[in-house]
Image (cartoon, rainbow, N blue to C red; front, top):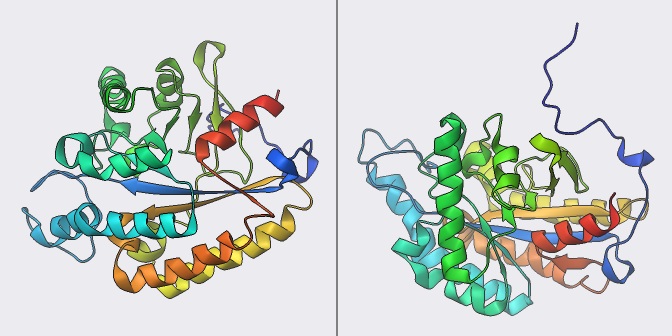
Length: 292
């Protein structure tokens, strides 16, 4: 029996690949992906703290909006305190609603990556022309406000159609964060012979699956981060690895969780001389220079 496949990459065992270093001889690259999202009121998709009932779901809309009004600023202060770079995964609707939250990340030199127009919608269900328009509109907004096109993309809800990688490559994107199939970056095939770099984006060290879906809390999530860091730092002696940490301001910006996040990120920051603290785009660029 032959199972359906995606054709984007071939199987490759991590123990059987060429070995290389990250800059300055480092073997573990660590990046933070901070999701900044805006949602429609009374319609569309959205993470739920608790069952909200019929629209308008004020409980969950307001909980998510707290992230843009309060949580992101608390998290920004933590990143500043620890001198941690960030890849900002940005819904372009943020520019219309609260552009103030982007400005300090821009001033820090953080990376702005595409994250659709809004997480109230899912691009995977759209016809190809409409999906291409979604990507084009989000890209144009980031380019207009940041003065440069984004290099990376994370789909809202990590939802892909059969042609999403093709559309991203054709729109000028150099890397995608949608695929969590590896601990190293690697090339994906796109139509017409193009290529797109897949940079590992975590689904375990991601506060939505951990806290919203699995009902863990901040202490357990922080322990996961520390444990993964120590294990991957050990494993990286054998091959270069990528450790991503996926955060949402309305979840980890909450005070009772932020205290535990501070503990975990402080633990990582204290080892900065042994690892490569970077942005997702830095990983994609370095990998493109060393992978044929």
